[in-house]
Image (cartoon, rainbow, N blue to C red; front, side):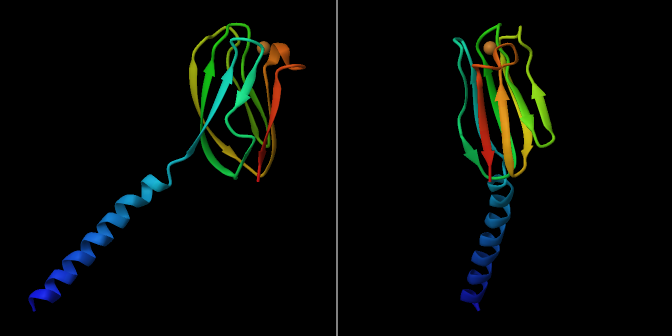
Length: 114
Ligand SMILES: [Cu+2]
């Protein structure tokens, strides 16, 4: 009798731990974008899987911005601001472009979503 009770307790604990781990595992993955201080614009990944992402944007210049375009997304930061932003974006399968608007011909990149 005693051992049956012990097994039941262990099983209940395992279920509780699994339920607790669930939401943490579903937290959005992070991407980091950095603009400036020179004429550089970068994103931490070139290819990601479709899903929801938290984009940490680090703007390090008052002459640049970060503009993400594609598949229903059109988000940009202020050129004059020098600060960090946090965006939550839902990325669908396809190709996104990111540019600095004042220098779009030289400050640009693409993100592939598979
Ligand atoms: Cu620029």
